[in-house]
Length: 387
Image 1 (cartoon, one colour):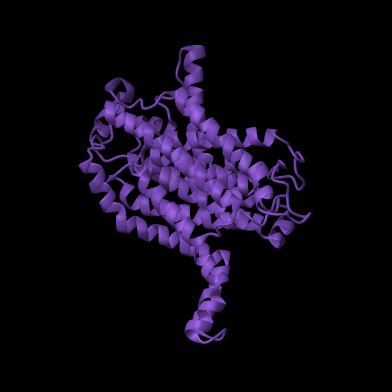
Image 2 (cartoon, one colour; image 1 turned 45 degrees about the horizontal axis):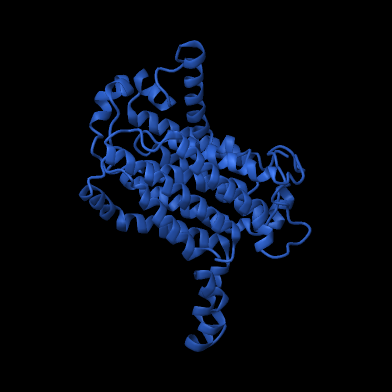
């Protein structure tokens, strides 16, 4: 929206303020810069979160959308410490999605296909999370929708978004110069040239796998106050840098990164996500006034996966999102070990609960995982120069 003001700055300046030397013309000229619009998106999302956060909490309480707490058998030794969370409003992810969508639409170019792919992924997986949360609240249990339904929904969403990135970006974005990276190329952080040149339709499947894996990883991380939103903030900050580099021919060429001009707009999307997460964290910090629920965690995963695909840094997500990977792997190892050996590796999975049972306070687990997430983000960014 504000980019439209830049495109029509001459009309506003000549009709209202007297030409190109007017303060209005010079101010509207700022809207052309990705950095300015990225900062605006982050600030707008944060301010909107603060403005409407209390309203969302009151509405969720009035609708009696409280967080169901798992049984004593499920929680094991954590029952006493987590029982007090019962009744805390969930589905707070609607605040993240709403502020993120508004700030993105206000600050981004509407003609950018990558932006719409990312918004679709965020909204579609957020809707899945909403249905899951609704089932938990309506049935007063922690099961939600079936695992099969969730996987099918994630898979279909991933295929649509994957096709949009692999084929739709260039087809709908107009003819691109020869130096623009093929969106179906497979890049690896430590290699200058594409690992695989033009994966063909396999790229769609690969991107769908990333979408599904990332959304589930963020979902299992969301178990403590502010844990997922804090880790998502550092991850989104790193991908704001990745997207900006990928969208700039000069930086992409210097750092041997796959370049596509549309990726620059994703830096604005990433910063909108940062602002939304920080704004939500204002109310989600321990002791949380509301939880994001699957509505927020699945949406965050879809958005982060889209940023990774658009910036051509899919494999870097394993490093940048290291905490999410650690959480997801801990669940897979726990389930696999119990089925194969009849023994558990961790006292409880995901791994953040393991440390709680070990004696760490909830705030210690959260803060230390935030620190790990920041380190992972810095290490991931360092891979830009190791080529």
